[in-house]
Length: 176
Image 1: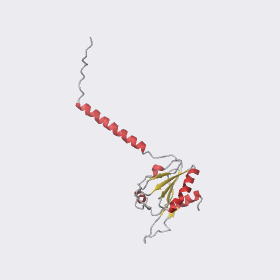
Image 2: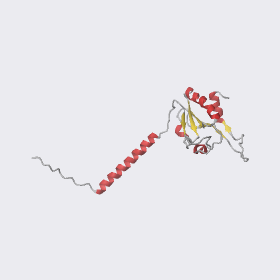
Image 3: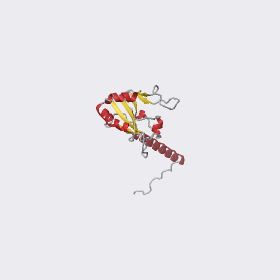
Image 4: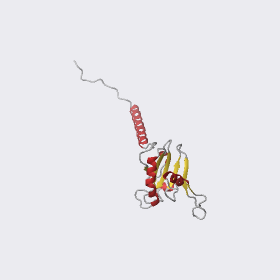
């Protein structure tokens, strides 16, 4: 004869139930953090096209360095005529040279018309002129950058300012 009564199981102590729930909650949180970190993982290889990053937001350039490649960061705006003149030559440089990566840093927030000098990324890098270039070595060290230094009269001091990044880029794209 079969007994329809299942054996009684002693209920788990309440403290065990709360401990198990805490453990599950912690594991779920860790899983969420890991998945978001993987989704936001920096790109460390050359893409087929130059990346376009920032859209006015602050950015950590080191997230876009590619080990073993020279990386050119081009701070730009679609409202800047001289910047647009660099678009095709930089695209061609990126495509032609396996050792060079071009990353376009758009200083404009999406809802701003005109060059967005007040954007977080423009303020982060103290931009007063674009196009503005920062060039990093294959080892991730800053090789050259454009820099405007202002004198006590508020005007750019040409002796202290530099367009070393632009000169390097101009040499690569054949503008000199």
